[in-house]
Length: 346
Image 1: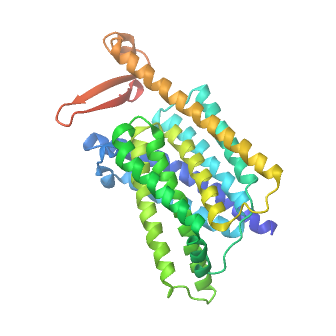
Image 2: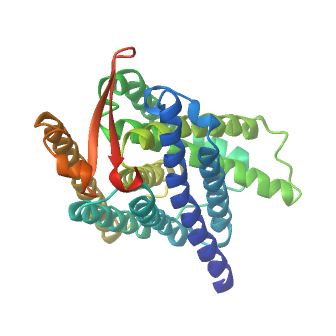
């Protein structure tokens, strides 16, 4: 057992390294694509022609595959909290490669999010692994989970149809909310597919069951939706903030979905419930701190432009290493983009 846990630990750490790096590679690819066409945040798909974006995609796939295998060797309580390492790796790489600096309060927000998520996962109830795809289908069609799916899809549609045009470019919770809600459904589908593959390899074929293919279609649909809106989030917001917020929301919603579908919450003691509530409060606090940091940066950027911008700060252009922010107005599309130019790179 200890040997299996060691393999799971190594795979989980490797997964975090790959996934954390993928955020940065995709971000750089999105920046290059934005210079040659319509930005992903405004519905463009030119990033599909960028090698760096594809390198990020391949890196993320490798990381997710390592994470999937890690669950075979080690329990979720060990593997899931290690996903927080991807946040730290992403933030460090963003600092050096993208020049995206987190202030002290932003660092505190990240730490709070990580601590809260770890507390939630550690005290989460143990799940009972189903023995067949048909058993998972029975769990997926129980009234409680059907209500959860209906609520999830209603919120996703509201975010896409109403809130995205209204405040998608200013509120990070819109894009990340869509990714996280769909991500929780992805995990449930992927788990069913994993069980089907495992049973098939053991000689009990699950290929002939229509539920297997239905779960596969749901997984593909959810993954594609996640990728589209994660690209929009990375193209619009600071990668060092997207990563922790996405991790927190995705982890929280996945735990909730798993608890409803697999009835993991039954039989928990009061101490575990209290610990999970404390974890949720810590997560919410960290998220609020991160939002406060982002709003402060946006206000400072707006005030610097309105107070004179480049003309009022000549020293920023000719000698300082501080970032200079310009507003570029494109009348043909009636869009206004905030472009950050760093003097050491130009």
